[in-house]
Image 1: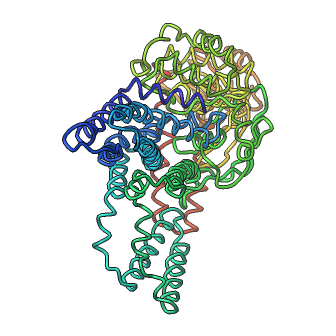
Image 2: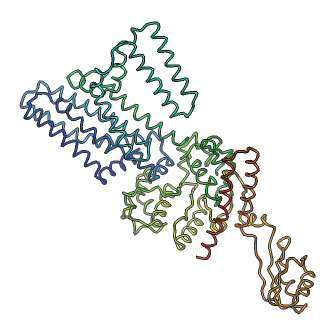
Amino acid sequence: MRAIYKRELRSYAVSMTGAIAIAVALLIMGLMFRNYNLSTYHLLTFSYTLNNSSLVFYIVVPILSMRVFAEERKLKTDQLLLTAPVSVGQIVMGKYLALITVFAIPCVITGFYPLIMLRFGKETIKWDYSALLAYFLMGCAYLAIGMFISSTTENVIIAAILSILFVFVTQMISNTYTLMSASNFAALIFLVILAVLAGFLVYFMTKNYWAAMITISGLSAAWLITYAIKASWFSGKTEAVMKVLDFATHFNDFANGSFTIPNLLYFISAGAIGIILTIQSVLKRRWS
Amino acid sequence: MIEVKNLTKKYGDHYAVDHLSFQVEDGQIYGFLGPNGAGKSTTMNMMTGYLAPTAGMIKVNGFDIMEEPEAAKRTIGYLPELPPVYPDMTVREYLAFCAELKRVPKKERLSAVKEKMMELGIEDMANRLIRNLSKGYKQRVGFAQALLGDPQTLILDEPTVGLDPKQILEIRELIRNLGKKHTVILSSHILSEVSEVCDRVLIINHGRFVACDSPDRLEMGGKGGTTLLVAAEGKRADVLAALRTVVQVTDGDLTEDQGVVSASIDVPDRQDIRGRVSAALFAANCPVVEMRTKKANLEDVFLELTEGEEQADQDDQEQTDSEAEQESPASDKEEPKLHGEEEQKEDQA
């Protein structure tokens, strides 16, 4: 694992992608810090800076994560890694730790900004650092998902576009809540559509027509029965489901001073899911 | 020792490897031979744990590759078809990385890397970026990578492809030397290479086992022993009569061209009859102008064996009556011949 970690870090350093990612992150965060905290708006909490720095993810996540597995596959160097006496888990973790290390650099540097604000008073300093922690964890979750996306394709451009899309959806989804009908029936339709999507996913992963059909019909039937018995169960379910993907709102909750364990766990588990999916996706390729 | 039992790999409905079983004894150089698409690379990828088999078992030096992958992989050095090198690293950096990856202890790492670079003659390239190396040098870097960690077994997928003739000779020499310390399995569709380097040859076609034996025995087992070509001056009848005193010949074996009669004689049991033939022809006043033995070479054996396979294949297909599949063996059928041509060109070069 150490060998892979060191090689990845070296590759970020040599290929300049690491430097570009760090520079972009620092530029955006520095600009926002100046605008929101130092001048223009003169706000007292650092979380506004971070809240408005989500643009960083649109650029840094694809730059850092697109090559992680896609490039290995293209160069056929995955043959070296997968035939070496290391487990797939170690390969994935080595690469992931290198990703996080690069992303940690701008976060550590921005960690000095709240200290600059100490001259305005130290009441908010705890919030500032919990917001920064949330920001870092959100980045880690994105990088894990980005790594997973990279492991599904040989094409770095596709990997980059897909990870930008993922960042876009998870940052913007809160803006669509008001578009959705709040009625119980609409929630039922929404869940049935999700069941169909789940069915497609099952088919895509197993290539088994029957497994997909059973997933769709099973889930839909369960929901129809629930709806017939207790329609009120569906109230607010659309938003609840969509909130699963809502990185931005979770971050805001976190950043606005409510340092809660569920919010912390949200980002950590998103990262863990990304890592597990990556491992599965690398293993799956051996079988197909 | 490597044990492969009933190894099967299916891609959709297509069998890339079809119930393949064989054993590789320690301390031997094994040649894995087959036309393109025969399943050589797939088999090697499964033996090294890169691909998972659909069914079957692979045991490498006592470890099952599916159940104890790390222990098994530690005993294997693998050079895939394309050397798995990172273009943005220098040779030294790359090999140091591989050494760490293969768990060479930290103290020995530098000396191990240096040793392998010396062995493959790439120490002059140590500080060059792999991106800037020629195909031959990249191949050698890949080779050095496979040797790191001193694995018991080396698996080499077409190790000489893309090299110039001098490099091919060097790599062959290297493989021969490695064979003294390691068990080597190499794949190739170049027959001369296999017959020259390998102790045993395993022929597969369409993912199926065809034959496995030493190159000499395979040659013998082919069209049946040796063929003696004799050309003598004189009358056709005289030559025939003289030859008949030594060996069985029919008039059909003879051809006449401008007073020179040539005969192609099948010699039973590989016995040496050249002296007797020469004496008999001399006695009959037919001076010998040319005489040579022609062994049935591995190439003939290979074509014969793999074509036989394809015939069987077509029979299979006729039974299943599948039109789509019927087209593929027809196009495949060209392949062994093509390799034959390639082979000849290479010999000329």
